[in-house]
Length: 263
Ligand SMILES: Nc1ncnc2c1ncn2[C@@H]1O[C@H](COP(=O)(O)OP(=O)(O)O)[C@@H](O)[C@H]1O
Ligand SMILES: [Mg+2]
Image 1 (spheres, rainbow, N blue to C red):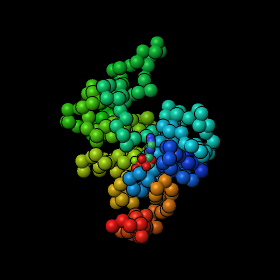
Image 2: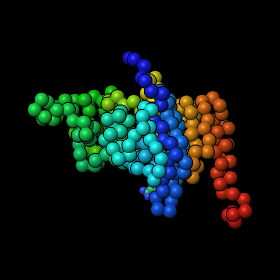
Image 3: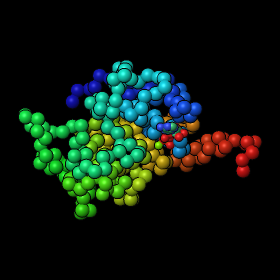
Image 4: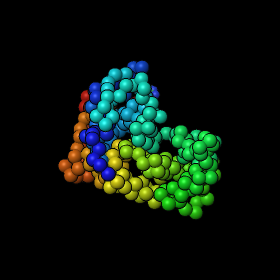
């Protein structure tokens, strides 16, 4: 494969996001390099999900610019569909799969395989969905297959399907918003393996994760968000897990602040 002719997969520049009086994001400059795994960390409400929703076309910011592969993107034409076309795949925190659909339909939503007459190739889609479920995600012997309705899946299984989609459609940037939160230990290991696979296959990833040990191990760079601002960036190897944990606890204490009359 030839070298891609860009240096950054995505860049947010001067991004502000207000929801009424809530300042969810302030002055965000955030970029992801080619084949870089960026861990995004910070407390609940820090703005992590908002940042990735802006990056992936779910939300439009109050102000700021977006560049994809070094080219400026017009917010007017940016959307989740456009992000897919640009090979961004996102596993959102909220359950985002259509509840009533069978799994195979959900898998191919917006990207149906059709024959020359435009008819959907149902058999082929089911076959591929089953293959990915079994081989890539490892839904072995749990009684779930391509015909199962999405409403039957656990939180972890939904994450698995979304990750399977990301793998299958050969995304170039994969965004994971707390993918392991609802998972059993065995499933967590699969997600971690998946993130490693993103790296070795030459792709980029933004990985939001509450488990510091996991991001510390996997990320090339950690970006710390606090109350809507980027307060720190840490390169791989720059800080031990223990020091990172201590630094984040300090950050929280600093925020609770002495003299505010709180216990
Ligand atoms: N749609 C929305 N409407 C109003 N406030 C929102 C909305 N989405 C997020 N927020 C607020 O923005 C802040 C950041 O939220 P979020 O990005 O979900 O944080 P995180 O993912 O880091 O936990 C929070 O204060 C949250 O309540
Ligand atoms: Mg979140």
